[in-house]
Image (tube, rainbow, N blue to C red; front, side):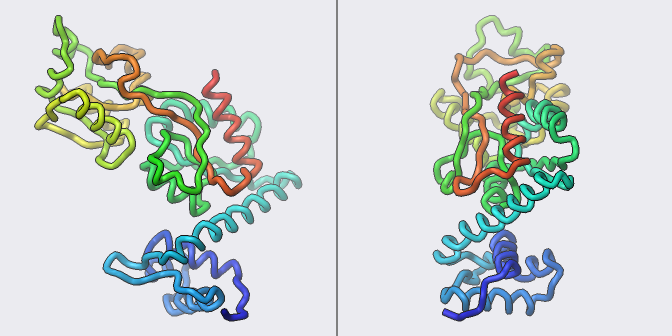
Length: 303
């Protein structure tokens, strides 16, 4: 093992390559040349005495040593940022920030109230809301790019190195426009939905897996007319001008349910419910701004 000291630039280069899986893309992101980035990576591998990456047709892939080092490198960068935040908070110098990953339905239903409560206590703290799929957000969380993620509990394989605090259960619902033919059916049966267009979450998302399990258990034949989307704005707009049935978390449809433009098809209570809560890195202590955001989330959910 070399006696070269591991510096911040080594960790930064390593984490960027791990995220982008490309030396060229990582060099562009860090605004340095590819030879300089490759040299920095070699220095790090020499210092550790192991190979951290292998090249294949998909790009730069982590070795088993790289997987282990990723957890500690990301935690080190996150811990350093927490220290900087703590000093800023103690000195009341401003410039604090908190980055929250949220699923689209949570962004629409819960986060506006959360941010309002947070800003009442910390008006000078910048809040960054990042939306995406659960797997993408959890990857960003592990790399220290997000302080926390608010959404449904991920599958066990995605929760390695992470912790989850459950806040509430949210059902998935079958939403239709007001005046939909199924609403006037005297004896509605679930199998009738196969005769209408469906709007489903993207394949591979948590709510799509929950939906597929439910439909399989109920013996429902899939519709021949399917649109896949996780966009709430598109879903609401398309639903109002079509006969589609929207499989969506209830929070995404609440405003339209309350104003009567959208109605729900009857489902047995608890048919498709999932836990929603806060996901954090298990090996780090929340920075002051992140801790305050977590408390704002808890308060908003309780209101």
